[in-house]
Amino acid sequence: MIGGDGKPCESQRPGTLGGHRRGPIYGRLDCPSALRAIARGGYVAQRVFFLDEEHARAAGYQPCGVCMPAEYAAWKAQARKNPEAAGKPDH
Image (cartoon, rainbow, N blue to C red; front, side):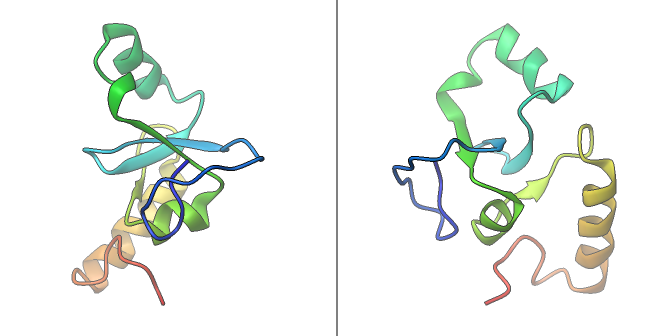
């Protein structure tokens, strides 16, 4: 799993969100777009997992527009207001 600091970490709790290291995008584990990419191969090697949205955002990842459209729209609106802070930790 990837922690809020963006570094890999061990966890006793499973991640609730998946992402792609090169994206960097996070989304639901059943995201149709991610599942298609996994089926094509190659994506799995760059797959990362997050405990929750807070950890994903703190690590600099943005929500997926396919499986998390409301979260993506909110992120996009924030990015337009403050491009410098988009995807960066709030603290």
